[in-house]
Length: 260
Length: 308
Image (cartoon, rainbow over all chains, first blue to last red; front, top):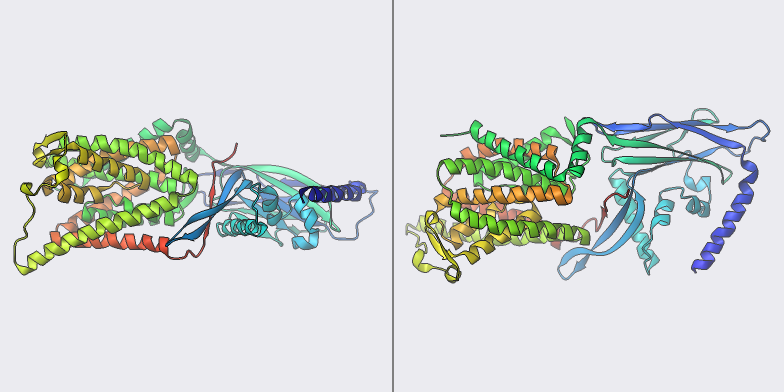
């Protein structure tokens, strides 16, 4: 089962390479509106725009199909455990679980068309295009029952979408001219700090022509950063400082509201 | 007005959190309890990660119990000897509670541990208190004085070995049940982010027959010490104390508690205990629903520490 699958992947890969070799001519040139998003005390989320153009050298024959772009933004990786509450006697408690390793804490997949129209299932899986493909490729815990595995993956994506941390839009990439594009990425306030990888993939007629990688950083600044660093680097002093603040306010309240 | 919480890594509405802590402070001031048992679930409900809710709430407990301890100290209503024995037991309980917290989180059963503990505690303590207060009311309205058990009606556990005299509390008993009670309260306090006043007060009153005038002060003294240790341990082991959230909770709680305490003066003691018992039962039943009713969303995600 496993070997046949990998052979299939290999064949697909070879076919793919053959298919793309003459297509080196198209190139993505992209940039981000910001390479550093700062979190201050007033931070309530942010947005960043991926923009760029598709360049074609003069010798290349123009392609028939339109350009299709998929912009994938991945936040810092985490190991996520999805648990299901099941009935045990009279109570409902977490029983089955499934681990997903190296899942991005934030994921935004923006495209100019529905992903099914852009490329085939197999290639989406291979190049990790789209939310389902990313979640499928990442999991390592093998369940005996594939239906159950699928259940947990669906639940993971559903919950993350509810938290606005995962997002997929087939109208996320806008072409301003046949080759000029822009894609706004919305970062909710709950998106965690860290490095965010941005991948822009160009497809024409179901084939991947080029990929462009860049990244930006979401960091706490000023007071937010100092508090965060202090709590990690000097947890004892941080704890003592909080304790002193609490004692001080307790004492202050007593002075302010003394009734006798 | 939104403010970003540096440790919880999410923004909250300042006025909303202040208002919420003022309401909880009001209830806690009225009943002379910490209010942690109401605040922690509310914080989890608005999206604060449970570990951070529990840990930051601990700072609020330190502040509110400091205020009442100072007041009690001025009124000389703290039994320092009994308090110290309670503190010693509470320390050990707190340390084990913190470890239990971390272990349950790793096993993915933290929610279950918290919910089951809440249900058991509130239903047991609530119904015991309800029984007592109904008896109180019954005797009051039937016009007969209630026979409270006196020193002659000592429960057997008070006669265990290692006896100690606590003159301020008019108590001469074995330290084993006292330390045991303190241990238990320190343990669940650290585990659930509650001060434990709602258990300690009735336990000292009904199980040890400590005079009412000493009970509240002594329990507040014990709670200051235990919650201080829990706060520092939470900062050290889980790095989960959000100082901004803690300050918001403290400020809102202080004002609410003052108003609550003023209103409590006009409440009759029996009525007061009846209301507190009903409040505990209501919270317990609310949590029980969560445990017994089929969940709308059976799935949940927990993310491990971020990878480097």
